[in-house]
Length: 72
Image (cartoon, rainbow, N blue to C red; front, side):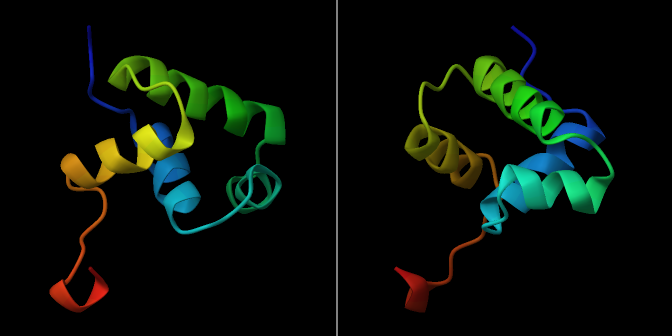
């Protein structure tokens, strides 16, 4: 299974990880909220994760989120 993300999927993921809602992400990117949710679903399928917690953990594992020692 392909696990690489497209540029659009990466942007959606990074905004989601930054705490934006699908509605906010849609406004920022100029796309519909439902499209944002579809991109998130595609990411979750590519990475074979089943919920938001697993998605965040996988994003950390893959280097999309950097944690500093004082954040742990």
